[in-house]
Length: 424
Image 1 (cartoon, one colour):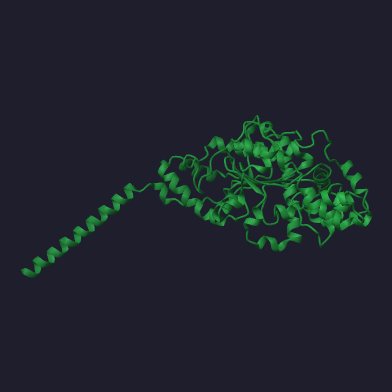
Image 2 (image 1 turned 120 degrees about the horizontal axis):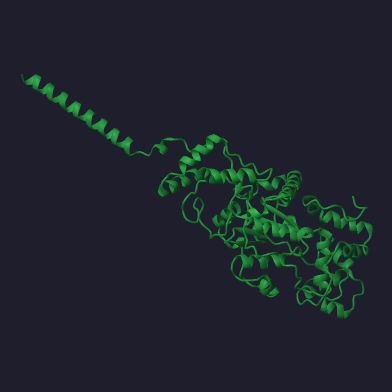
C-alpha cells in the first residue's frame, strides 16, 4: 500500500512539472515577436547611396532621432528610378517584403535591430574609406548634368587609384597617423573632411566650411587672416585616434587639385613677387645666398627679388638650403591619396562646376555657392596656362624636364597632360 502511494505521488509530481514546462513554453512563444525569428540579413540588398543631411556628430550606429527609418515602397521605387547608372541601387521584390514588415517594428526594437545589424558592417569598414560609395544629391540635381559630373568623379578616382596601385602599392598597408591627416580640415555638421592644397582654391574652401559650420553667414564676410590664422576650423590631427578613424570612415572626404606647373607659378608670384614678411627673409635670403652669384648686400639682407629660375634651382636641389613648403609640395605628400580613399576629387580648372556639385551632394544650403573673388592681389590677373608657359620659358629644357619629373606623380595621379611637347 505504501509503495503504491509513493508511486502515485511521483507520477503526479512528474505530470505537474511537464504541465508547468508546457505552459511556460506557450507563454514564451506568445510573448515573442514573430519578426524576431526571421533572419536579418537579406541577400541581394545593396544600397550604395548614403542619404546625407546636415546633422551633428553622432556615434556610429545611431541616427539623429535614434530610430531606423525603413524605406517605404514609394521611397524605394523613387530611388530605383532616379539613381544614375553606376550607383548600384538594387532592391529585389523579396527584399521589399522584408522592408515593409520591418517598418511595423516598435521604436525600441528598431533601435536594437539597427545596432545589431551595424556592428559587423562597422567592423568591416577600412579606416581610410567611407561607408558608402557616394552621397545622393537633392532631387533638383538628378538630371543628365548630374550624371555627367558623377561619371567625371568616377573616372578621376579610377585614375588616381590605378596610379596608386602601380607606384605606391606599399602605401595601402600603412596605418593612418596624425601626420597623414594634418592638412585635413573638419566640418562636423555636414560631415565633411577637406584636404587643403594651397593655391588650388583653399582660402575660399575654408570660407565655405566656416559658413557650413555656422561660423559665418556669408563667405564675403570672412577676412583672409581669419581664414588662415584663426582657429575656427579644426584639423583632423587634433582628434584622438578613435575620432580620426571614425571621421575617416563615415565623413565625405574631398580634395581639390591644380595643374602642378600652374600651381607652382601661382605660389611663386604670390610669395616672391609681392612684399612678404615670412617668405622673403626665410626662403628668399637662403635662395639668393646659394644660387645667385655676386648677390648684392641689399638682396641678401632682405631676401627680395628672387627670380623664377633661382626658385626652381632651390626646388630641385636635393640639398636645399631651406626646407619644403606646403605651397609647392606634392599633393601626394600633402593629402596622402594613396592611403586615404577620397570620395570626391575636384579640380581648380573646373572649380565652379565641381564645387557647387559637391555642395549639392552634402546638402549645403541652396544659397551657398563657391565664391569667385580673389582676396589677395585682387588687381592682378590669375595665373593661367599662358602665364605659366611664360615663366617656364625662362628655364632650359633639362630644367623643365626635371621639374616635370619632380611633380610626375601629381601629373599621373590627377590625369594632367604634359605642359610642354619636349617632355617625356
